Length: 486
Ligand SMILES: Nc1nc2c(ncn2[C@@H]2O[C@H](COP(=O)(O)OP(=O)(O)OP(=O)(O)O)[C@@H](O)[C@H]2O)c(=O)[nH]1
Ligand SMILES: [Mg+2]
Image 1 (tube, rainbow, N blue to C red):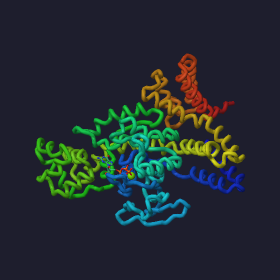
Image 2 (cartoon, rainbow, N blue to C red):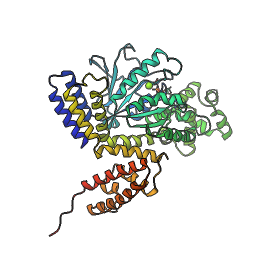
Image 3 (cartoon, protein in one colour):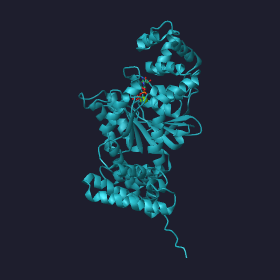
Image 4 (spheres, rainbow, N blue to C red):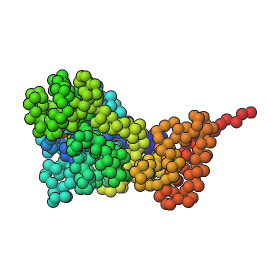
């Protein structure tokens, strides 16, 4: 409903702004944005594994990846029936090209890196019907040591300039992301925009020990707790392993090398797989080129996991890829993307539109004095205060409760978890049956409990209680009055 209200208000404003063409075109693009899939930007430091994650999500090695700084232009991945890419210039002009036969976007698309352009890729990938992915250049920390390189600054600037175009974010915290200034470089621009964000501890396979992915879960939990209110959840992600598994990159030759490894006696296998150098030097396991290739595809932890998959009965490339995928963390990330973003598209689009309208009306906006904009801002502010939109506040409160930063009695915690779910009314209300009567009864009981709590709780808890009561009231209003029988 909020989204429809905003869409209509934008249409009216566009009509009223017919003698202000620059404003009218901005309003038209805001309205167009409402009709599109949700835009999710992937942000993180240089080499955090952003482009690798894009490839894993779309199931194709399309984004160029490299150990050196690689993505210099913001690149959009949208749904389209035919694989192609467009180079978008600053003046809006575009040139269209088919994707090469190997499906990879050329790493140099034939423009000077300084040209202020972006790239728009279209792929027939089902996930892109629901979400548009925006791959960004690495964020840096230019202030830390008196200014990064010109490239760092340029990349950082391009990324931060692209973020207001997004509705939601995936924030990759690198292996070194546990250090304060690294976290700050990435989270500052995110915090400034207040966009909903899910976090991942990327390159989770690169740590020491036999099972670095499992070991990094504790670091991820610590980050999640430090970053409450900025990102919901932080889980370990081994993007490279996910990319290889989901793009069908393992071939028969790779499987033969993995088989040889799996057949070694336990002590020899442990020795060979202790470090990448030892694996490279293991002359009794395939050719040097084959070992290099396997390391590039999976990293040493991934190679170890592939051999373990054979121990557990995987017998071909597909089965090994399945085993790798399920341990990489990508399934969980996808699940989070659907749960927190795709299924909440209308709510998040409404929130993003409200922020964008706010930016038109305030700050350095050239349209600040326009009466059309003033009317629009007023509508947006009204919608922002509606119970529909305040569900976002309740979701944030739940994240604080989950992170242990806000204490609530157990029964209210359970109520809160149900209330923020994207589910039918009877489930949100915690009713025993999906009937109007049961729903109303459940709402009555729970509201009494929350109201009693509100009256004696500390201010932060009382605020959550008011938000919860507001949602119950709204649910109650949505249930049809029973028709009295004669
Ligand atoms: N071991 C390991 N390597 C990874 C992982 N993800 C990416 N890499 C490697 O790290 C390097 C950088 O990955 P990219 O995906 O290009 O990183 P990016 O964040 O897009 O980097 P920029 O575009 O330069 O900012 C590449 O060599 C990847 O193969 C991972 O999960 N584990
Ligand atoms: Mg990149």
